[in-house]
Length: 80
Picture (cartoon, rainbow, N blue to C red):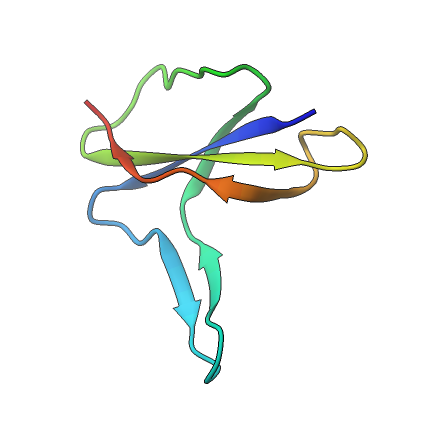
């Protein structure tokens, strides 16, 4: 079963940090994980101003939301 990770960063914050190795770039998501859920919706109870979100879809063979890697990441969405 899939689960969802909710990521948040300031609007002026860095989302991705990429290193160029002369071929494919090696990128790492720099956003904070603020929640994990199996539900198709999630609410940030006290969002700070001027932030954006992304939702990551993940799964793993243990069916454990505390493990695994994000396979798909949503487009960035500003709060509000």
